[in-house]
Image 1 (cartoon, one colour):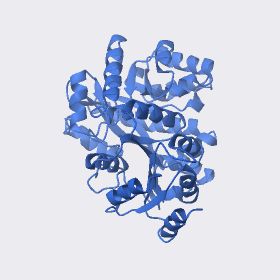
Image 2 (image 1 turned 120 degrees about the horizontal axis):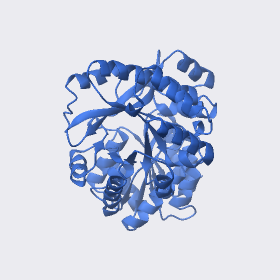
Image 3 (image 1 turned 180 degrees about the vertical axis):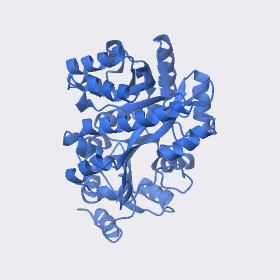
Image 4 (image 1 turned 45 degrees about the horizontal axis):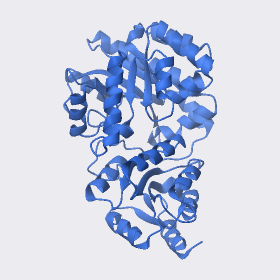
Length: 414
């Protein structure tokens, strides 16, 4: 272990619960510049000269690290190899990639990281500007100026027994994030997102319970519970004159069960909701796993009138093939392109291409992750149909969502 690594580890041991930023940069001067730029934050600054040292930090203090800023070109273990190893860790903090390479190179590495299952908040050319740092901090919700960010209580590692008990006692409930129609500036739908309101620990982040349910084969129970609660509320809203669709995410692990579509249909029809008022969001990865049963389930859902949305469009390697294989009704443009389209020509081109393709295929286009007014206006200019994101509305509980609807479905952000 190097002296640099030992020194930074010592600083963390006394404040292990405080948020930390890990700087991975082989150049001493560049690393010091980064440290100075982030020194005003109330966070620990960890430092590493290469990927090997960085992995030691992650293995010891991964739960405390909010962000890793990583250079790509380093000795011993470069940024790409580090990202590959990071994807195998139980805890993989958010990653921001730094390089003096051109933007197309950075975009390729960003796609590679996502393929390894890593959450990247952006790719940035060195040296970082003040605007770029502000963008990074907004993504991470580390500053007080981003008041719309979700405030999760202290997190802990829950057992499968605890999580299943919470599911059965309805502590896990839907929060609703509004979808805005850009032509009318009205709320026309909402995505139902699972949130756990723990009776003593408060609101728990999805990553604290969803992966456990996935591994323990309880993800169907979560999907059914979330859908049942969501359509019950949707029926109330319809009775009050608020006609809107509800979107629910489907897990890749669910689509191999040939009875899955029947069970979803039963829940919706029992609530008195028309099937065309419900959209199921499916990642392209989900559509490719266990292909034949997945196709049968998705085809059956479309035959029964449900909407199908291809989620995170463009982040994998088979998006175009999936559009031709499955009768999707909606194309959801991934936030990684939306959040960078004002700075990167490549991202804007992908967003514009996606919107145009959706129009030609008779599909609705939805852009997620809209966090700035400039992004919304560009999407309106490009002809996008619907948007969602913190600029429009953050995910909120049912009472707060009712308040949004009480404004007459108008969106103040628009």
